[in-house]
Length: 276
Image (cartoon, rainbow, N blue to C red; front, side, top):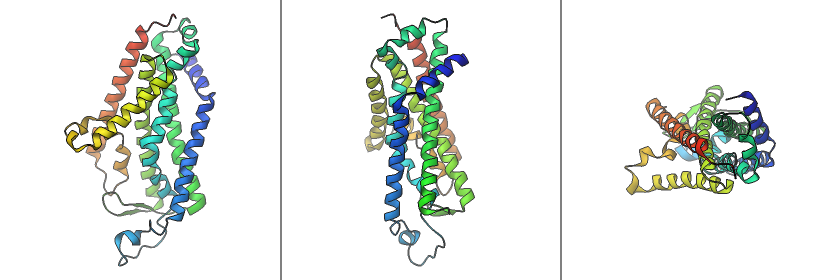
């Protein structure tokens, strides 16, 4: 992969208006969750959940709490949609505009072009995920201030701020891996289909369909093999105890899904006729 091709793809990606509109959508979601947390602080209080016989000093709702609270609603639906729309246009969108034929007429190997598009899509997925975390921390700090991280998953755990920040950072790092899987699948379907919206829609449908199947009791036997089962690996570090075995298993599955999609994309892109 040439650096010139990568610079070109990054330039094209970050010049699009939809790129910055996505940041606005994420910011609105974070603001809504922060506003909801502000008005529901009494219900979110630890004492309400574990009983009045316990006395907990300090604040339950902090910037770390907000950063944790936004993860599920953002990473299970909104962020995958935004990543799919962007990745789905990287090949199919250029084919619709007629620029893909011009691009591939240059003396640059096709796989080098595809690799540049793949890395650009990963950079976008990672940037969007990190923006989610940083905006949640920043807005949460402005409204609630700094404090402990209270975790209710797997029991009650209260982590002091520095340890809580490490846990939240690890969770967002793992979430970046999940969003890169979505980006790779979006690019694969973009290489297969001519329409960018078709590629994006099918990418979203794959992940929503996988999540729906995983929620059905009679599909329990195939649940461990579904991609959405492992996309929530960030939850493993936001629990009372970290199951490193489950974390490693999920990472392996996500790596397999990513490599498989990238291989299919490379095969299709290398053979695809773009002369018309």
